[in-house]
Length: 329
Image (tube, rainbow, N blue to C red; front, side, top):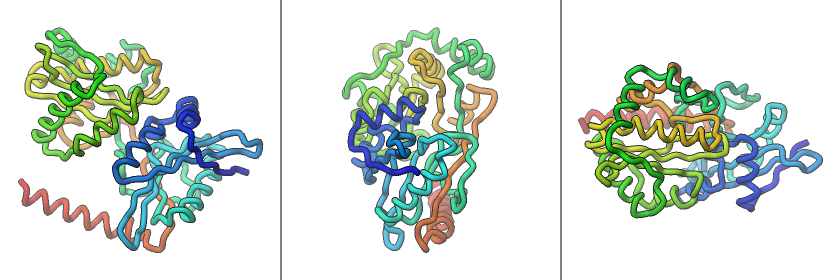
């Protein structure tokens, strides 16, 4: 018999996540970030009959217009072993319905295979990409290099030979320089950004669990790479490169530096943060001989309006997106 207990203690929560192979998006700081930007976070510990903690789930709640009320979402979780998973998911869905009256509870597990219990449905509506690249950091550097495309290895060596310096960002002034590169990258690649405060929140609320690396040339930053890390997993959040950085292929030396640093810190997995069609995916695919397909998104319907939420609305949103692309070319 499993029971649920709300966790109000940051140290207790993070200790459990870090000690039990949890993903950085289950850390307390990620919930704080989202709570400052339109979501709320509920952190639940699962206890067995001996009142030992055997699982955890950070649930993010997003308010939705009537009649959906809210969406409940567990990014890269919950954290629980296979034998207790079904019972925990049932308890989480019941609590979410009673407490938040959500249209659905959505989970995106941090695993490639996931046998979903009864009443859970695989969803095509993803929040995080299911297709990604995950490097096994238990491999040696030589093995990781051998898995790469020949051109990637060449560009790592070439960019590392340029007069660049890589350092970890420690203060707001240096972070602002990285955000300037990010705005330039977004304008060039035509994708949208949050406002600067969102990125300050990431930097401050995740703290040591969100390292930012930047490459410098002539004492000016020309590329950056921003991660979220737990004890086992590194997850790429953001990255950018300016024109000089592109010419010097700096993003190759920078990413290899980040991968090696994560190995040094004892992490076991390095997640590229998803694969989306375009040039960035071509760049990412050069780092491995295979892609990773995570299990995807699973929904537990909690409302009679779930069918509208899961079917009609995504189709309408996709149509509007296509129309905008036509008129914005």
